[in-house]
Length: 216
Image 1 (cartoon, rainbow, N blue to C red):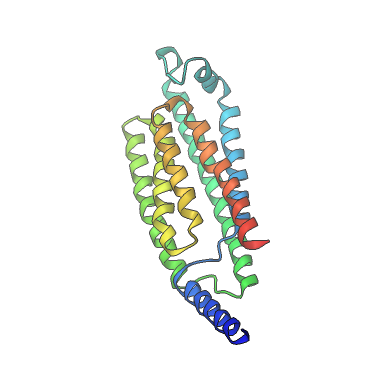
Image 2 (spheres, rainbow, N blue to C red):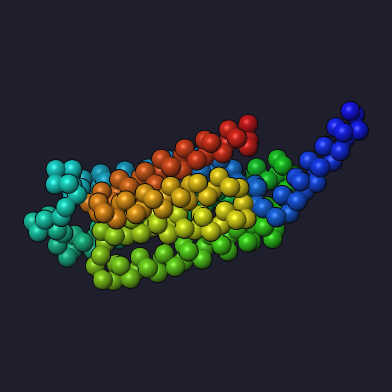
């Protein structure tokens, strides 16, 4: 019986070593929680800054009417504010991800930057970069209302693509983001709400699950 337990222990250790060498397992649930909170604050900033612009969406089923469309200067300020808001949210989220992932890796005695981390990031950024250029094309052609759903779709695809080299939980988050983005593309007036749900609430839920499952 003792010998069998020893074999099982050895197999478990071998499996753990193989997993560490093939998957990036240092992701922290806390980074997801903080990223979600930051995204919600960013979405709230956009909403309150352009409150008069978004309120009619609730009474008009998300449809834009001619009288509600922004004038040139308003549209320019709107885009500029969105870009600044998005850059700040992204920078703070990345900072939180680096901090908590580094801390989690040190706790587990793992390297923060290795081949698995490189593969994960490469596979994550390929769809993200493609999505970024696609959003620029939408902006160029004036299809601003499709940018929020598009970011969710490409972000979901990026997570699904990267999940091959990290924890499987990432795949489920990616699928959720992808589905939400597709749904949001049919209700373009509610893009900000969809964005807040996708990058905010889903990240928080994912972070709590990850933290409870792997870090407690």
